[in-house]
Image 1: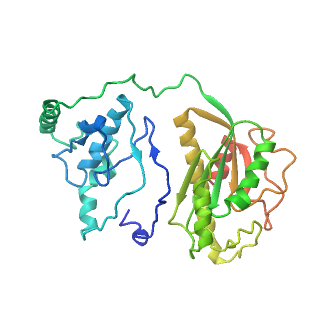
Image 2: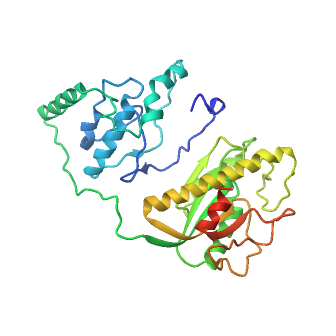
Image 3: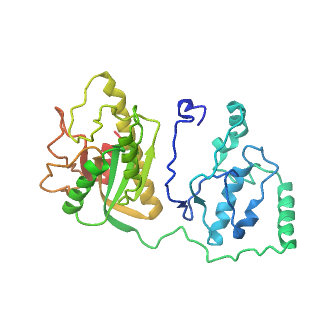
Length: 333
């Protein structure tokens, strides 16, 4: 990341008020040894492999520890940082070479692929024996988790909201109310929003806090290294005419990128949670749905419903609803 996003180093800010996030079973995320707290029940997971490269020993450890945590009813939890790190100078290229296995071979079996050597087993056995010798009480195994679900959960719709993470209260909140009132049933909201802006202001910071505290969403993702549309008014005016010149070309392609990413997010959530959505809705975070179509529900799986507003000389590109199959073409065009 440091090699491919050099301009982002030192610019990304994390929310100090973010509540801790616990990963559910069958969800992996790497973690390292820095600013990490291990509770007594997981002391067995403090072991660090010694036959791997130094750069990846804690990452490999994080994967098998997470898997064993599921068996004792444990969770990996990410919270806000409690330290400030002053990094020493070192070679990013050397780091990348030492971490090659992680980037290219993580899907393979750790032991059979030779990511660590057989003597690691002897050392680990010695570690467990040491824990026994000092009176450590190992946790009990709970009932095993199952990755299968007996039946598919049918839901009415998923809503992909893309754009800038600024006007959620002024634009998205009333739009969500309109959708909910016209399309009855279970609706899940996926916010995939850019928190980037050329000029940072106090109003911008306030708006970001609003969206981080917004609770009516199933998944919220904020990313900070792409400027979506720098022409959006600072006062969150929800109807504006952007300059359709060359400067608008790149933001437009970035909007398309956001649509595809949000669609993939919904499909991943469907698979993971064993859910099937009847419809997918695309909405913009900075646009209010004023002219509601007679019915939001498409007549068939090949129908795309769009409102007659915000056309800019063509079809509305800020709101659409259709079946998952037809919206796949819309979102991934």
